[in-house]
Image (cartoon, rainbow, N blue to C red):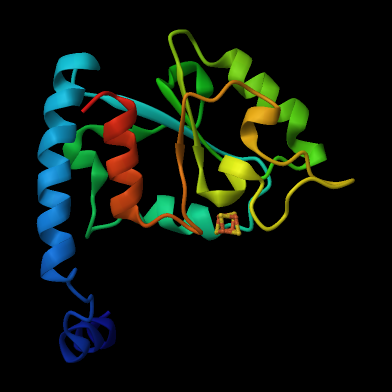
Length: 169
Ligand code: SF4
């Protein structure tokens, strides 16, 4: 225990702060998100993230929205493990053939009214994987999509900004 404490004090804080420009951008987007979520979603926008077959690059950026730097929970954005509690599906793609049924079932299990957002170039238009024997391509080939957040992968700032646009901010 003592050795761990020594190690902690010796190492100090190694987390890099966000660049000032990104910090300022997040503050603006965050304030708008908070206001919009308070008015429209009773302070809590609940998201179910679905990986329909991505390379996981998009997931890393989506996870980053929850880290100490971006901390999307402070704006009222929460992730849930169950589609039954979700207001929004954040889907990365392309949709692999093996994920088609799971994605359709997740869509059906999400209560109306629901928002579906295709994330990443692969989710928006199939990206570098396109359509093949193993891939059904874009998310909208499988379930109805309300909005797109392009990028390979989109940054946490683009994701937050895209979510803001989707909810009418
Ligand atoms: S958009 Fe880029 S990062 Fe996202 S799943 Fe496709 S290849 Fe990966």
